[in-house]
Image 1 (cartoon, rainbow, N blue to C red):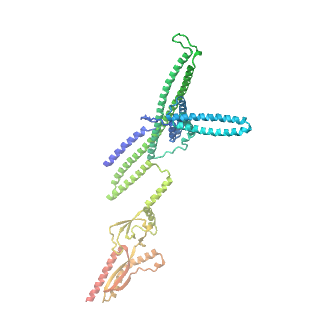
Image 2 (cartoon, rainbow, N blue to C red):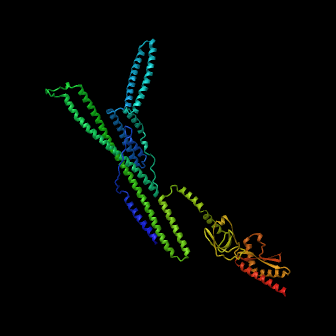
Image 3 (cartoon, helix red, strand yellow):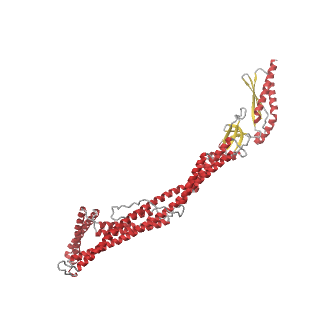
Length: 608
């Protein structure tokens, strides 16, 4: 193993150990770490009643995904709605007991309201009187009284509109807090009817497989948990604030309870400092009685407020407990997702280690092969690349998970591979064509895309030729191996000998000098060609006739043919003959030598 591979292996082993520790810590049933951090409190808004507990519960209810979460969300909505209802009742009671001081603008609006109320009451009384008079007056005066009644009713409507406008101005000026709270309570009651619709009712989301989806899911759960912690912190802050108000009011009630018996005892029987005589209960003043009644009513109202505080405190405790249970549930889901994500990381690290092991094993096995160095290196590269592709596919499968729409994915992948591997697919189909009746075989002399040579290898995708040059050249191998994709058998064309002997026509050209008798040379040269090609011509004629299998070739003759034509300086003699492709060069050399000998012998005779 190389040093670089050793370093990679050590790093992968360390990461695998860390991942294994994380898997152990996040296993089901492992202790949950205690949450830290400060909780943020909800600031009071401009509204006299804080409705944030209900709005927070409605917002969190949208995040409920599982059945257990929806049950907790429903309970949180119920408690928050009940808490806000009691807050409205308490605010109304406090507004009646302790109305806030009016601003100058509010005082002016209040005066307008009182004035308009007087006018409305006067109009109502006047209309009531006129209604009674309509029944009692004689018929002669009845029309007049009815006209006055109609006018009075119109005036009463105008005064009522003025009163409503003054009340609205008073509410906007912050003077009539009771009406404002009642309006908000009505809005809250209307909105609370749709509170149950805030919880999702669809099926639970299907958990997606894959490391990337696990990470995304963990982040979503983390954000949900942070929102729940914030809601729990706001509830606990409001709980502490209510507890402080409860304690302060409780101390005030104790003081009121301690003060009322003293006032009662002083009213029933008091001693004068000068005479020491007693005053009877019947002699107590009306002022003392009114004061006692006022304090008693104030004590009763404070007791009701204190009871409301107790209910709200218990409700907020239950709401905080519900948020705590929800947080624990989300934390368990988050821990489970993290556990599975770490399992995915462990699988990826295992794939890396196995890939590294098999890569080293293949290197050692390839080195032992008794092959050419270039072949060994090519085989090693192919094995390494194949192993890396397999490992990458497995890592992608673990990282992203199997595709959801398998049919669509396979269709798109098949279309993409068809486009990308078009040449290989066509070449593979061309291989079947080349293996057929009209194909080629090893040792055939062929011409493919203008390149001629002998077929030395036919594979499923490629054809390899040993180049021999043009047919008009010597035909000797050039030493170059030419590789073609088998697609030429479908998309292009190729030339192949139709006979087993690989016969082809060749030509011998000789120029005879002018002024000499050329016929003896022509006959002698023709005789030489016939003798040299007699056996080959007979075999070629038989093979070509059987290969052609047609009437046109039934009268085919492979005998040499002579063509004579005059040229400048003499006569050109062309002898066309058939020869085996592998013997063409040798036969041509032999015939050329015979032609030289004949011409030389003729020249000697002429000289003598």
